[in-house]
Image (cartoon, rainbow, N blue to C red; front, side):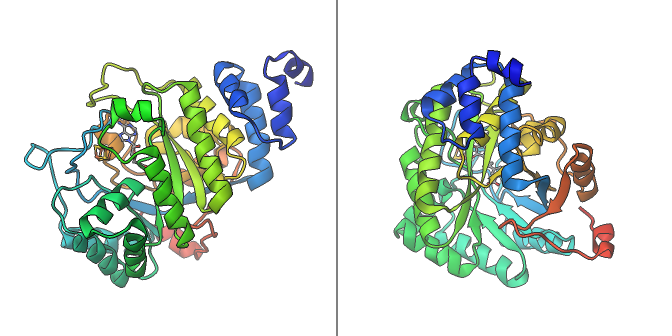
Length: 373
Ligand code: V47
Ligand code: SF4
């Protein structure tokens, strides 16, 4: 291996990463331009094992996409609809609460709640949603609203982002998911999602959340029109904010699904790109504890393989995710805990059920057997 590695054009970068030296943007771009996936993956795996040992995390969770009505028109999104358009929907409070209660009864520890930027639901609706779920399911962690939604809510409430976050936190919000980050490059945002909160705006919402004690995830949507340089700049911005706040829990690379979007002429990501993005993210984000494979987007099989390429978390049972499925994802709607455990064990890893904040969940054996999801 060492002999082969010496012949590799990225030998110096692999050695740097192995010695825990921080990689520069030039290093990152060179890694993307290399096809030496086995050496990149190997060193990402070394770092992953130093951070997480042999553990592979999963969570029992449920997604609630409360509405697909959105005033933005991101070109990569197949989920959103105008209010009057065919296929638009919004769940009422009763429906949302029922989904939350059923999820709690079925053993979920987390609800992942996101939706479009609805033009006329009032701020009170969102606060009430969090409060009522929190009151009905006090043990459930509510991870809700991307930074983009938070900014939208602050405009509805005519309050600062900080004040908006404080009110939501008091109502029971536990943490923020990592969506809406896309790629921070202003050039790409102008091209794909000009109405969306800017990259700097996204980072500022996360900064505010972290300083209020609300932790969050981070994402990057890749495989559309971005360049390796755009990806690396994105990762470096995340790394800088993490140095400042330490508030990010995990990073989730999101593979673009083109079907039913304005970019439907583009092809889906390849396994080579998916594994490179995962492994290079693990190497660049030296201050992130966790790299998560969202199996819904990555596919179940590649998610399993990714456990040897830098990933230590394969998300969870998910249930009823609509955003990727609207864009043609062929993955199932949900995986059972038993299926997730089998995937992890077959990859030679030790499955650990975690809660949102990465504490292990202890269940009685009987409860695991009875778990419906
Ligand atoms: O913000 C939209 C992306 C995100 C498409 O925090 C698309 O744990 C692929 O952020 N193809 C929402 N992606 C999902 C998300 C997420 C998912 C799982 C876990 C977590 C977490 C966060 O999905 C959006 C956008 O970046 N997206 N359209 C598409 N066609
Ligand atoms: Fe709206 Fe989010 Fe879809 Fe953009 S990605 S159109 S903000 S739902």
